[in-house]
Image 1: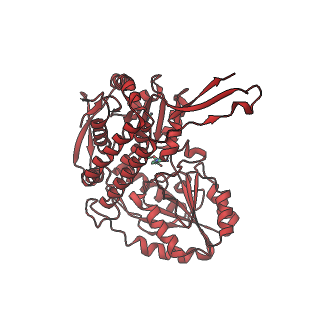
Image 2 (image 1 turned 60 degrees about the horizontal axis):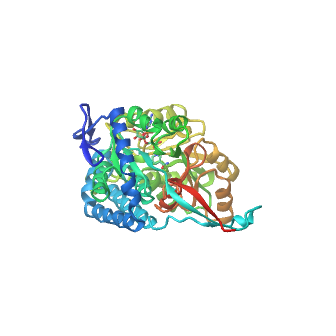
Image 3 (image 1 turned 120 degrees about the horizontal axis):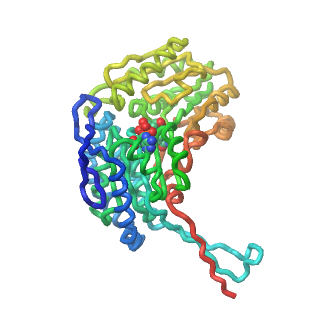
Length: 470
Ligand code: NAD
């Protein structure tokens, strides 16, 4: 599939295969772009500025709603493509499609709500006699750089608010899974002037890096790993930057918790998308009093998962993004076992598949829980009391989301206040998000927020206009 630049389809002499991680088949190829192609995309995006800014908010909103309808009409086709490029079960791809449609719809609505406010300058010294107000203006060209795990919805979280507030966009989709995003950009291009949305494929180290360092890009909106995010923040200079990075989310299960609910939380939180979720449950912190019962029930439910062909609707556990990724998870789990952890179920790899794995007797010093393990692994760390639980929850560089299971609301509130994370859910695992909520981590998990309204704030600049009426 070709790139889309200034409304034209552009290829390259060098091509990269897009491979189905389940069966190793090449689904398609995409161009490996180089720096000159990125410069062309930047020029085309800038050329589109006038025609986009001339559009009324009413028109931008209507056009986004038209794309919503097109996406709905293509829901099943897009879901099939997502499953073949990511290896996620088809039912999860359909959920990603529904969320993508919802995210786009939220942006179509938000396009009509780009408000400024009146500012009482007379509340300040010498401000009497002014009438002043602010406007929120587009930044210009937004570069959207996105990861493989939820390629479509996470990219729409950038493109849609960017266009809603009249920015042009250059999308660098994930190298492993670029196709759904590229197809979506084609739908957008049918509605908006050429150059409003552009795609550049290739390697992050060249294409991504050039977007990050180019002086003609006004905003970097990045979702991906901490390593890449840190590099971007060092190189971006004066550009506005939003970084949605990795997570190592804790889930605390207290002695009074509804154990069945907590077990369900782990099944939905640690094994969704084969554990490749930024806000996945990555550390279960269980009170010793119930840890045994909790672990037994968790093993029973884990063993009900169906690992297999992701395109089969009965499958609940697909592949990881590649065999290499599965081997990394295998190595991390094996190291934890060598250090004293105990596998209760799972622990075996087959190509790009890694079994849903419950692992007990994990200690906070193990790599398995210090770094983000991006695979279907549920590590249990046993603790003795509330203080220890909160301490362990915070013993990480990450701070994306967290879940606390208890029926004691005073305890829940204490945890909510003391856990250092962008979101704390009570009686719900961290692996939950509605697409309108402010989403973004503390500590090394990121900078800035997404969730359409919040993304619009990050993709606009405020101008104050003051009329001296005296
Ligand atoms: P990654 O950082 O390897 O890649 C993300 C994107 O950055 C890709 O498009 C890649 O090509 C590009 N890139 C790579 N090097 C670059 C460079 N030097 N300059 C510019 N761009 C570059 O991440 P990944 O492996 O695709 O995704 C998994 C990670 O993403 C996990 O850590 C996960 O937690 C995180 N993630 C975070 C969120 C969130 O919202 N916080 C959501 C999903 C995934």
